[in-house]
Image (cartoon, rainbow, N blue to C red; front, side, top):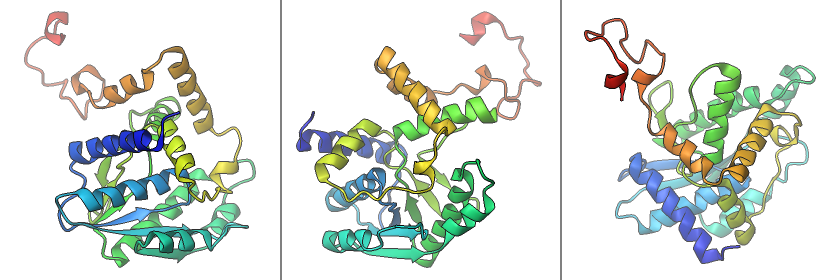
Length: 264
C-alpha cells in the first residue's frame, strides 16, 4: 500500500491533468462542490481546496450537501466536519427520499428518479449561491461504467463528460476526478479517515446493472492489466467517420469514393 504522500500526489496529478486538459477553472470562479458524504466527494473537496491554495489564480469554493431526509441520516456529521475544515458550506434540506420511494414501483431501482431530483435541486442551489460552476465527484471508473451501461442497455455511445453546460446554459458542470482511479480514492479515503455516510437508496440496492458492469470491468482489468487506461484513452480518441452516426458525419455527400486505403 502506498503511503499518504504517494497516494496524495498521485491524485493531485490526475486532478491537475483533468483541470488543465479541459480548462475547468478560471480566475474569479465560484464553484459549488457537491458533498454527499461518500469517499469520492470528500476527496473532490480536498483536492480542490489544495489547488485553491497553490493555483496562480483566485477562485472560491462552497461545499453543499443535499440532506434528502433518508431515515437514519446523521445530520451532524457533515456540518461538524466542514466547520473543522473551515470551509464555506450550506446544507440543503429537501425530502426527495419520500418522493423517490413513493414514485418508484416495487422491485425497480431508485437511481434514475433520485438522480433527476437531486440534480435539479443542486442546479437551483448553485444559482441561489451565485456559483457559475458546480463540481461533482465522478471518477474514471464511473465514466467507464456509464459508457458500457449506455452501450449495452441504451444503445448509444455516451458517457459522463469531464466538463459540460447544463441545459439552461447558465452553469458549467465539472468532474475534476475524471482521471482518478477509484482504488486510489478508496485508499486515500481510508488514510484520511473521512466520516463516510452510507447511502440508503442506490447503495443498498442489489442486482443493479451498474454493479454488474463494474464487476465486468474489474474482471477485464484483472485479466488484462491496464485495460481501464486503454479504454479511457479510447474515449478521448474518437473518429466520427469510422462510426455510423449520420448526424456526426456527412456520409451522403462524400465526393470521393471511400476505399480501404483512404480510411487508414
